Amino acid sequence: MNTSKRSVVPPAVSGARLPAGMYDADVVIVGFRCAGAPLAYALQRAGVKVLVVDKDPFFSDQPISTHAIQPFGMKMLDQIGLGDVVRELAPQNSAFRFQLEEEYIQMAIRGTEFDSRSPRRSKLDPALQSAALDAGVDGRERTAVTGLLRDGDRVSGVRLSNGDGGRPYEVRARVVVGADGRNSTVAKLVDAPTYLESVNNNGLYWSYFEETPVFREDPRYDWGACIHVEGDEARAVFQTDSNLLLMASGGRPEMIRKMRGDPESSLLDHLARGRLTGPLLEGSRMVAKPIGLLSMRFFMKQGTGPGWALAGDAGLHMDPTPGQGITDAFRDAAYLAEAIVDGSERAMALYWRQRDADSLGLYHFAGDMGSPEFNNPLNEMLFRRTRNSPAAMQRMTEMMDRRRRPIEMFPPLQMLSWLTRETLAGNLAPWRALPRTFRFGQMIERQQKILDRALATAEAGDLKPTLPIL
Ligand SMILES: Cc1cc2nc3c(=O)[nH]c(=O)nc-3n(C[C@H](O)[C@H](O)[C@H](O)COP(=O)(O)OP(=O)(O)OC[C@H]3O[C@@H](n4cnc5c(N)ncnc54)[C@H](O)[C@@H]3O)c2cc1C
Image 1 (spheres, rainbow, N blue to C red):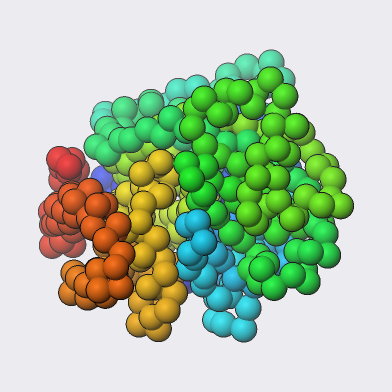
Image 2 (tube, helix red, strand yellow):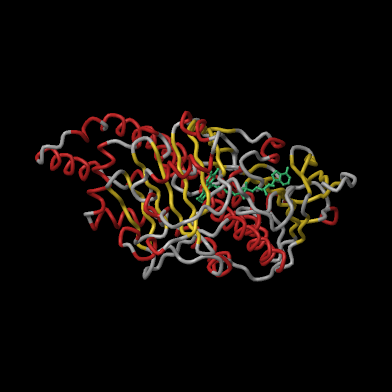
């Protein structure tokens, strides 16, 4: 990415009707966290005049989120120039593990080209915001977007209102970016259509615990981050900053509703039952009030339009079970900054279409991992066989590095050969889950073709914002 100072006339605006001098900023970014802060930083460094606003006070926590950053997220931060800022906040995860009952797949991090960290949002968000403000970004805290300005059908600025009771005012900009999270006001104001939607009715509770010597010394914990599905429950452990572990427990709505009465002891009970979490409680203390969340809605929305763009959760929100949202927000920041700096309408359209084509498989994988059906004998077999196959582990690493799509993880011939070997060994259970997995794979392949076609059409120069019908 080119971060040299240069003057930019962002795209969507080559056709804008307002004369150049009438803009107060090149870009207004609404939302100053995982998507908005790195985007503001990257644009400022590229010489774009940025104004960023957030209705929250700056340097505040974003408590409704855990915070594992995937290797690809660290790569995106490095591309923007913020990787070292995050490296200072929390130790490296030695490995990232996904476990299903006793079977697991583990991606090594320490000693490889990859990195992964899990600083708490109370550290991560302020560090990203400080970097952007230190780079010279004009930031306004406690300032909410309440409306958009328009010039014909083009968005040409925002109406702002600050929480100190000051008068609402207007700011004109060539591009307005909604980086304002899953309940995005900007997405609502531009009426961004949704073409992929799903719900997870389950929930989770999480809190922070003192890290004990068991975590550092016991060979069972040769990872820094783990998501573990057991029965119809899920647990997560992330080594975070300040010698703390984040531990989370998720499960069916009934279980979460019961936990509401006494979250502290319910969370402790639930974690104590976990094979991996139980031993981590011995001699440890919970140091923060548990936070819980029940039922979430996920979606993919149109990513750009005349004079506007969406980044992070505002445009694409996926099930948090495998912890991909922050990484997606960093990816959007890196790619949208490039598109805005490029200055062509084509670059903006490609940002949207590329995001969709790259994210579909992960969107469905995340939803599947968050569903009670994920725990089935076929997936257990896939975990075990993958761990023992260097070729499959290589594919897994490439998938985590977003060079390979989840659907390409298990080629049909490979699957058939593994199923045959299980059958010969007397294990017929994986076959039971095969029809569901087959139907799921077919649906993803069909949708992927549609999104790949939309990308190819935009690459060929057709920039009409035709919505994919999935
Ligand atoms: C329970 C849970 C656990 C998660 N765990 C992980 C994990 O381990 N790893 C991971 O990668 N992801 C995780 N995620 C996902 C992650 O939290 C999000 O993907 C990420 O926060 C998205 O960042 P963002 O900047 O797009 O939005 P947000 O972090 O939501 O920031 C949006 C900002 O916009 C501001 N804003 C909103 N409306 C306005 C307005 N009208 N005017 C001005 N400002 C406004 C808000 O105040 C906020 O500061 C989790 C999510 C949940 C719910």
